[in-house]
Image 1: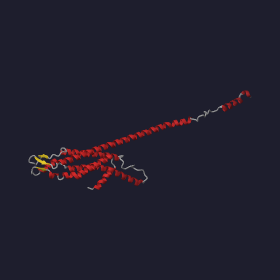
Image 2: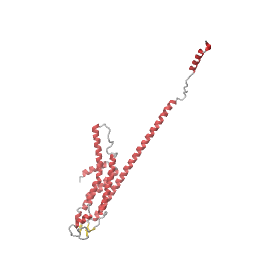
Image 3: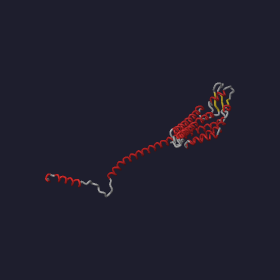
Image 4: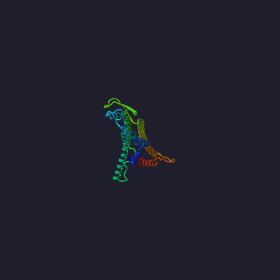
Length: 278
């Protein structure tokens, strides 16, 4: 395994994850990948060779093993780890697509142009949906493989002795599983860690939804406050204009138009034009 590539991949995924996402990734790589690589493969080893039945009938041993172990636990967990880590890579690829788009936009319109994204790694718009859908997909993968493990092996237990009556066995034969207790412990460990990862993914989805709802509520409250301030300022503006037109400095008398000059001139005109004056 190329640990340098794994470390770079882990750091890239953690860069765009939340705190719960980083915890999930640590559990996956420390308690699932490491246990799988270091211990689980050695515990199972050549499982079919260690599966012994008390008969010499040709083909009976292979048929009984295929009946009780249709898919090896190790291969099933390998598929589970591959499928459960792929959605995290989609987030990294989405961020890389944003960065490439931003680079082309700057190359076309210059460095002083308006940016397409304020932060290419910020979970907004399509990246938010990609991140949430990746969490849902990871939960679905873990839940599906836990169910498949229970369904195919009829539980998570490893009895030391199983009885097989499949054709071409001549009768019901006894078959023995190697290291049943050790395999039971590892199986339960992998199931529990998968359940913990499902719980963490669920908590992360709820956190993202609550955070988005709080942001929408805050944005709606800010817009309402802005609209209220605009309406209050529009009401105050006509009142201010009316107050300025009717207000005058204190102590200054109100200016009344004088009609005395006009009235006296009118009387003089009547006096000169009267008939008794000729």
